[in-house]
Image 1: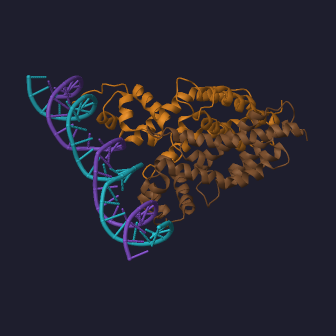
Image 2: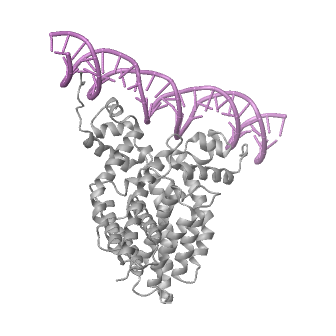
Image 3: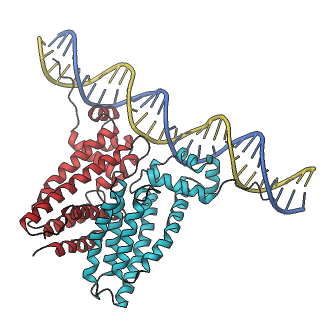
Length: 199
Length: 199
DNA sequence: CCATATCTGTAGTGAACACTACAGATATGG
DNA sequence: CCATATCTGTAGTGTTCACTACAGATATGG
C-alpha cells in the first residue's frame, strides 16, 4: 500500500564519507554541515535515515568495525600468540598511517571526552574497543590450551596490553607520527610475547 | 602612575579548576559557562586574564606540566632504564586513576581531534607529550653510556614505546579501566626493558 | 583628593549549532 | 489515474556558543 519515494543516495557510500569526517574531526568537532556536504545530501535526508547526529555516529562505527572484521579474522588466525600480536600491531601501524584514511583510529579519535549531552559517545567508542580486547583475550586463552603460550601467561593482561599499545599508537598517529615510528613501537611491543612463548 | 583595580581571584587556583574542566570534557566539550562557574569568576575576568579559550587552555597545560615536573624528575632519577620505565608506568597507572583527578591524562583527554578553528589544539597537546618523550630518550641515551642499557638498544624507540603505552593507558583510564588493570599493563610493558638491560 | 588604570558584574552580541516545517517530487498499491 | 507514503531541497527554528560593551567599583600615583 504505497511505498513512497525511494531514497536517492547510497547509504553505505554516504556512511563512508561520514566516517571520514568523524574520524578527522571527532564527534563534537564534526558539524552537520560538514557531514551533509561530505555525504552529498541535505540535513532532512540525514535525519530521516539515521535519526540524529549520534545515530549517524553509531551507524558509521558499525561500518567501521564491519570493514575491519576481515582484517581482525586474519589477525586472530595467526598460528601463535606472538604472531597474533605481531600481525595486530603491524597492521595497526599500517592502517593508522594509511594515506587513504585520516590518521589514527576512529575508535580513539572519535572522542575520549565530550561535552554535556554527549556523555555516552565516549562509552560507545569504549565498548567497541573492548570487543577487540575480548577477541584477543579469547585467542590467548586458546594459545595457552594449544601450548604456544606458557601456562603462567595472563591472557587477560596480554590482551589489555595489546589494546593499550594500539590505542597509544592511535594517539601518536593522530599527532603526526609516521609509519616507521609506529612500526618501531610495534616491534618493541611484540618482544613481550617472546618471553611468554614456548617456542 | 595609577595601577588599576587589583584582580580579586587567585589565578593559579582558578587554573586548577579550569584544568579539571578541560580534563573531564575536552577542549571543545568544555564551555565558557562551565569554566567560569568552576573558576568562580565571570567571563570578562577570564578574557582579561587569559585572552581567550585557547589561551586559557595553554595556561592550564602549563600548570599541568609544571605540577608533573617534580614527579618526572623523580622518574628520570631512577638508577636504571628499567627502573625509569617502571616508575614512569606505575606512576602513570596511579595518577590516571587518582580519584582526586578526572581519569586519564589531560594531554590525551584534552582533544585528539578538533573542529575547524581549533586545529592547533591537538598540536599543542602533542607538542607537550613530545617533551616527555624527549626527556625519556635522553635518559635512555645516558643509560647506554652508563651501561645499564645494552649498546644495541634503541633509545628513541624505547622512549616512543613508553610514550605510546602511557597514552594508551590514558585512553583505557578515560573509559573506566581501574587502577589494577592499568598496573597490569604497566607490569607487562616493563618486561621489554629487561631484555635490553645488562643486569 | 583627584586623575587614571585596571578589574568586576550585568547584560547582552552576532554567529554557528543541531535539528525541522513545509512544499514539491517520485515512487508504489489499488 | 488516483491516493498514499516516503524522500528531497529550501529555508528556516530556537538554543547555545565564544566573546564583549558598558558602567560601576577599587586600587595606585601625584
